[in-house]
Length: 92
Image (cartoon, rainbow, N blue to C red; front, side):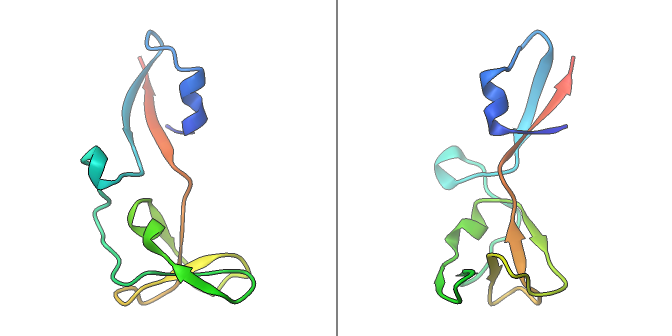
């Protein structure tokens, strides 16, 4: 099951086993399996910023351009969004 990272405040090792996390960075030796080339974050106000966060989180491909923040990249055919970090746990 995927739970928010705030779950760690309530984590009971006698009840749950931590399997992993869907976010990563080089300093944690965890990286997403796809690396987006030149990612761009498109903001609600129409401005664009560096989209490097796309390479540290899980992403969801979108079929349409949303009214909210979304990302594009040189090697992505469609817009995408990033997900909040989730910890994967299993009940013992």
